[in-house]
Image (cartoon, rainbow, N blue to C red; front, top):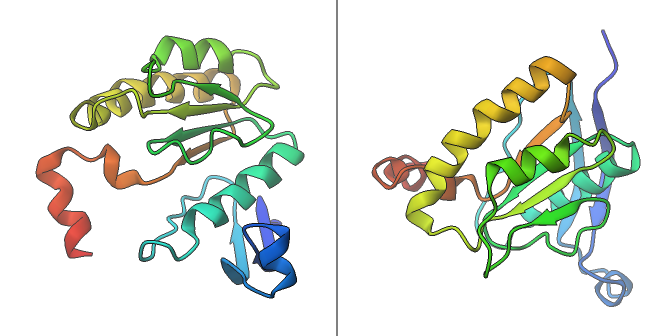
Length: 165
């Protein structure tokens, strides 16, 4: 069996040093192994530490010098180091901006969608994914595509799927 692409064992995460000192953890005892080419979903109720877990994963990817693109519909990752932020509340990112930034092999990207109306996010993803797939087919990167709060990316008619789960 090949070794995992990502391998976290017994990971505990706190939001800050103060909470760590108090023994208050956002995520407790995560074990995660992901093989190359596999897909994962991190699901759970609001406030359970999903975004915190994603932060830990993405920080690890950055430390290992993997290129990633993180779709951030709520602006939760704008201060994450090791990646270029594109978009904010005043500026909707474009697919061309993302692709241009990712053309640099050592450049990862956080795509902040706060400037994209909620109703337009599914079409943004619909135009984004084929371009990223073409990059991956041609260059083998970005190595990771991370979509936080994926329910923001579903057309409104499909959101019943997320509520039923």
